[in-house]
Length: 493
Figure: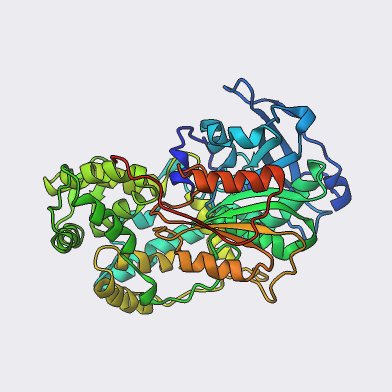
């Protein structure tokens, strides 16, 4: 997610009713009729210049004549209509991120692109105001948060499996016919219908993280309809990419980058030696397994401690907050670290329920809990701060049925127009090697590499990246070779 959903401050209120009530009595539509829609734009509540609308998309793209669901949209019209190129569609990542509320909260990063584009975004199906999925009543936290999420014993494992099964069953009850249609493939097909609705022959698109993977999936499905497309830190897991359970994949490298910087700072609570600081942080996290810290709203155990650290790595802008949170935790106050972890579970503008549904529908991988426990043990040796927590994320699809037809790529699509791929060498969320591997599947693409430690690069403070992306999107300038952007200036963080 771009800058942890750009610190979105808008909360989406979702009423917990079975979702099939929202679309069971709609009139049949054909694909042609749906593509002929035109949004009825009106001013978004609370905004002076942003416009909102909704359009209908098929519940099941393979049966467009049957039920439809609503897709919520927002746009900022181009400032210079006489120079307008068309519409540029944004996806901020996820899955599960509301494009509308994210864009409403902070449209400023896209001011340059808005000079010649209508900037358009949307709430993906199941998210925000696009027929939202809500698996839990009264906004209750998911049941798995009440048990140990990195179990070490058979009773702890049984409790986690039971909680995960309960959560999956609740999603089935509440989701109805929508649930199996929450996939990245379906969202990519929504994108193509949105392209038609906006009156565009080709899709111009900027996608961050999972949104970059979504753009790559769109290119797989519709290679002849790709316009100017930028994929920033694209996640290869979008659409059901390889998800083999492997402890060797767990890494503390992003945390180490933070620690290397921390020990140079006067306010670093971990000391002045990198190796000792890493040990100090490891002990802080691992000791929470047997000695959790009670905080307002819950308990800071080892899993949430690791999660709180990891979630603070999305941007180097968050590193000062992480230093303060660690100083508090070392003094026995785990509230800030707990809050950082919970911002991942339920931040404003984000649906954990939709994210889980999409992720689990996209893949057939359902590792055995006992195998996860063994791999987590190995990962804890290789990445002692966050490895166990990372591997236990593989249990999220426990209790979920496998959706037939989840896509992943066969042969690479033949690209008719270049795609720009942006990757950051020290990205703590999407490994740079994964970005390069994804790039290799998109023939004719060009790579922009940033030396840095944040997740996503466009409009993150680096002029080289910004200028290269904007020249491509605004003027169609395709670099003759891959672009290497040096590390941005290191100011006080």
